[in-house]
Image (cartoon, rainbow over all chains, first blue to last red; front, side, top):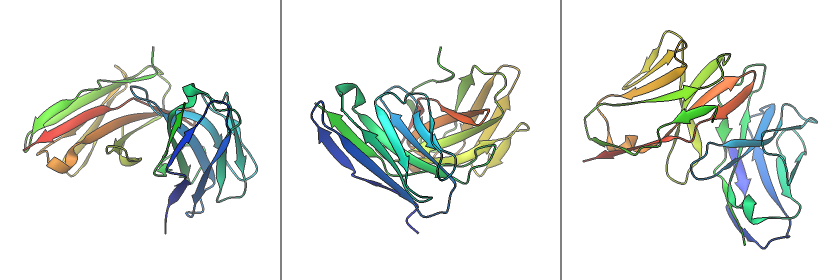
Length: 114
Length: 108
């Protein structure tokens, strides 16, 4: 039981390049989330998916797109990377429902955009 | 103003001592509250939920003060392994808001 896995662990991009961050969970959770974490700031929600086939914007969606490929997988795409997107990206999953309870996080992807 | 605010610390605590810190939130309609723990360069993990009546889990005690809109975490008999950043998390209408975290450093 791996929990939540993310790839890659580290990535360096040049401004304007694109890339996709992959996330998968094996806990049969309905909800999945993408966050970014910057120094001195709390985790900020980029996008979330309450269930397979649905996605919604979070607090900071600009510059990102997501795909809920199936119940297990939720990917985050940067179409044209900018230095402001240098951050640590965490994927998380939860059982879902009206009141979120425990979210399980992946190990994170450390992205640097030069 | 941030919706969830925490003292960033660090709180330097001798091993065996007690440390406590608070987190304030701005949305009076917030429904549920959590403390997560994050080790250096690792992912956050749920430490405990915070109930209205206050709750304890071993050496950890969480309190909620709705009137003043803050939650607190107290760690008794601190261990070296308690060194981490503690994230305050507030649920408002299904959306989780994370604080930036309070760093605790337990020293021998």
